Amino acid sequence: MRENSARIADRAGRPIEVVAVAARDRSRDRGIDLSGLRWHDDAVTLAADPDVDVVVELIGGSEGTARQLVTNTLRNGKAVVTANKALIALHGAELSALSSAHEAPLLFEAAVAGGVPAIKLVREGLAGDRLLRVGGILNGTCNYILTEMRNTGRAFSDVLSEAKALGYAEADPTTDIDGWDAAHKLAILAALSFGRPLAFDSLHVEGISRISPADLHFAQELGYRIKLLGLAREVQDGIEAWMRPCLVPIASPIANVEGVFNALSYEGAFAGSQMIEGRGAGAGPTAIAVMADLIDLARGSRLPVWGVSTPANRVECVPRGTLTGEYYLRVTVQDQPGVIADIAIILRDCGVSLRGMVQHANDKTPNGTVPLALVTHQTDEHAMLVTIQRIAALDSVVNEPMMLRIEAG
Ligand SMILES: NC(=O)c1ccc[n+]([C@@H]2O[C@H](COP(=O)([O-])OP(=O)(O)OC[C@H]3O[C@@H](n4cnc5c(N)ncnc54)[C@H](OP(=O)(O)O)[C@@H]3O)[C@@H](O)[C@H]2O)c1
Figure 1 (cartoon, rainbow, N blue to C red):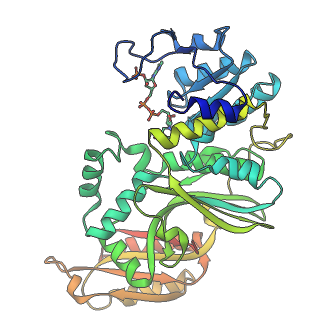
Figure 2 (cartoon, protein in one colour; figure 1 turned 180 degrees about the vertical axis):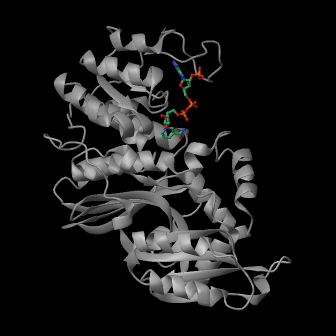
Figure 3 (cartoon, rainbow, N blue to C red; figure 1 turned 90 degrees about the vertical axis):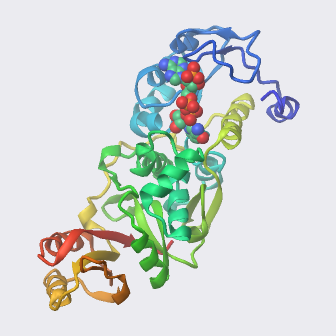
């Protein structure tokens, strides 16, 4: 804000000034001069500070101080800008109700894909469209790990350690690698796209920790890349939404979003499909997203939280078993006669039709196991779940089979 203050004031139509701040540790050197700013030992008291028009919440976490601060600020009729995806994904419905009741704007551009203007695109740019599908690559840490694993052939744990050392992964990376961070963002995008908040616990979420170099290699050979993909679309019975690693065709735009980059992809009934890509985290991109919200407020713009004046009730995602699609299966087997026949019988009994299979004799390990990759035609996910359960129970199968969805990208 300080470095770009003249331009910001010009764009906002008036200066935007920081008057008060809070953090945990007052003595910490933050590399900026905080003199002249009122310090609040308790962040929640910012909500009642008479000089504050807008509270910018960048604490994080769906509960505790962040939730209290945002709730109290809205109750006091003041605007909130936040980067807190967990808070909005889990408590967005209640906060949206508070925002309407107290006519207090709630903006959260930085909560989804950092510097990529994902929320503006969906809530404003596509406001005249009927969105059929929204999603994308929403976690830079996972995308970096999968890209590095594919480029170097190294194992997940090895690349994760390197990502931590380079600052691309948190010391505790669980929220990222287990898919929750990206799932929070997807839930927000889905709510904006379909005008109703999602029941977050009905979202199917899978992370990337079980992806092996063999999966990435097989995918490449079959003409795909593996990406942690989120997708939400309107289906006949409601909303399909999930966050999971998927195979996407190498030639698709989403397959070529690499490293720490994020991408938002959507399909509108009128606008067609499009993808935008950029930096999803980091100080600069995140600050720019926060500033976009502050400038909107300074300009007097008043946007409904979910982009509609009458949001529908919270909606459950359709059950996973009802999804249909093509699937990739990796099964590690004892290299012995009859194994393929056993698997083929299970596939036949479950009504799953195979489109292809890959096996390499030189992938055989010293203990006699070999990975097999199978690709199915369109089938329903319930049949696939039964299939992998039965395959896993075969004596010749070692380790839990890996099942990934194949998406068009
Ligand atoms: N990092 C990114 O690139 C990024 C991108 C998009 C969105 N976000 C979101 O932004 C939020 C913050 O993430 P971050 O990466 O910036 O986290 P962070 O580096 O841990 O910063 C959190 C800040 O909140 C302060 N804080 C923590 N607990 C507090 C409390 N009880 N009272 C007052 N202040 C408190 C900390 O104070 P001290 O400095 O004194 O410890 C610190 O300044 C999260 O919701 C995250 O999802 C982050």
